Each structure stands twice: as C-alpha cells, then as structure tokens.
Image (cartoon, rainbow, N blue to C red):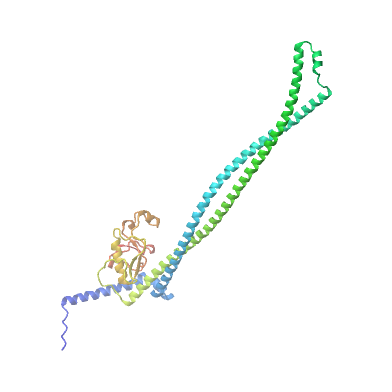
Length: 385
C-alpha cells in the first residue's frame, strides 16, 4: 500500500504561484525583446536562412581566417625586421664609403691643383731652357768668330798692373758664365723631367683609387636600394593583410550581433526564462553562453567586476554570447579609440559588449544593468542599473 503524498503547505503554494508569475513576466519580456529590439535583424536572418548553428560556423571560419592572417602579418613583420638589420649594415658601409670617397676626391683635387702649378712651372722652365741654349750657342759662336786674347797679348796691351788684373778677371768671368749656362741647362732638364714623371704617377694612382671607391659606393648603394624595395614589398603585403584583418573583425562582430538576435528569437519561441539569483562571474563560462572578456581588456577596476558578473549571468540565462571588448580604459587610450578622457570607461563604470544590442532596457534592469545612452552606436554600451 503506497504512502499518500503530503499536501503542499500554504507557504509552498504561495511560493509556486510567485514563481509562475515571474516566469510569465520574463517570457513576456523575451517576446518584447524580439519584437521591439531585434525584429528587423530576425526577419533578415529568417529570410536568408541564417540559423544560430550556421552563424556560429561562419564565426568559426572567420576566426580561423583571422588566425591565418595574423600569422601572415607576423611572418611579414619578421621579414621586415630582418631586412631592417641588413639595410642598417649597408647604410653604415655606405656612409663609410661616402666619407672615403670625399677624402679621395679632395686629395685628387689637391694633386691636380699642384699638377697645374707644376705644369705652369714646367712651361716656364722650358722657355728658360730655350733661352739658355740660345745664350750658350751665341757664346760658342762668338768664341770662334773672335777668340779671346792670349795671356801674352793681354800683358803687352795692359796699361799697368791694375789693368792687367782686370783683363785677367774678365777672362775668368767669361769662362765661369759659359760653365754656369751649361750647368743650368742640364739641371733644368733633369728637374723638369723628374717633376713631370712624379706628378703623372701621383695623379694616375689617386685617380684609380678614387674610381675604385666610387665603384664600391655605387655597388653598395644599389644593393641597399634592392633590399629597401624588397622590404617595401613585405610592408605592402603586411598592410594589405592588416586591412583584411580589420574587415574580418568587423564581419565577425556583425555575425556575432546577428547570432545574438537569432538566439534571442529562439529564446522567445521556446519560452526559456531565467529563474535564480545573480551568480558570480566565471572567467571561463561553461558552454557558448555567458560573458567573455576579450584578450587585453581590463575588467578589474571600479564597477567592472560587478558589470562582468551581471552580464555573465544574463548571457547564460538568456543563451547569449556576450563579448566584452572594452572595460576600463586609461584617459589616453579612451581618446585614442574615439572616446573621451573622462568618459565612464575611464572610471571603471562601463562595458562595450557586442551581443547585448537586442536586449531591451527592461530586461537589462532585471539583471541590474542599464543602457544609459540612446542610439544604435551606443546599443552595446552597458553600465550598472
């Protein structure tokens, strides 16, 4: 014989009635969410045949492509860094060659200036040589045409001893002059020949050295230019990949928004409602629902932990995939991303959360949250209610 079940107490019946009323209220809110907040996107999703499963597949494919593009950007950056080191080495070598070339050119210019002066001097010596030869020839001819008197004639023609000495000195002077002219001609010829030979060798040597340095400089410059052109190819490739990555991220966010609305539509159709207290925030929520802080974001300042907890609870209750892309921001970073130096993010009071755009204000209030700013651009900006 079975034992009869005890009848529920009055308190239990009252609690059950409250629970049914709360479920009906949340179900009504979920229906309003689809009609008021996500009607247009839900209709578009239905028309295009997009389901949460297909949207999640598209998001996964986009994320996979993002990984490939990021890997390509990393590889390009590595190549660019490698070229940078080689280019710097070549630039150092090029600067040294430019310095050497400048020194060689200055030295060659100085030698050529000296050579010009020497050639001018050479021309003068050649003129002097011609003159000395003419003088020598004239003296030789004169000596044959009118030979100098001998010593006996000088003595007989002399008028006293003083005149005799003077005549002898004149003879000696003529002899010395002839010898001097001959010596100067020989010395000038040797000097001109030696100087011309030395300057010619010096100019040839430094001209060859200057040309050698110039050739090296041009080779290094061409090699550096080739490396720079190759580096620019990788820079261009990285820029194109970066642009593609931005497009992929934008497309992924759009898919995530569409997925949130599709999930909200399914929630309204199934009548799922939240029943339970706000739970603690889990940095790794179970399943695909809940709040997920994006890498590099900060949800540890001010009200950010509480916002994250309530978003996590709401996401898991309403089967929403909520992504925190911006929590606390420094004033400088806030300005850089288009905010203000004193906006709520800089005080740790706000979260930009794609996936929450279709949730109505009344539903947000049920979880202690609010959307303080109107407009589609601020639909994912959430603060404590």
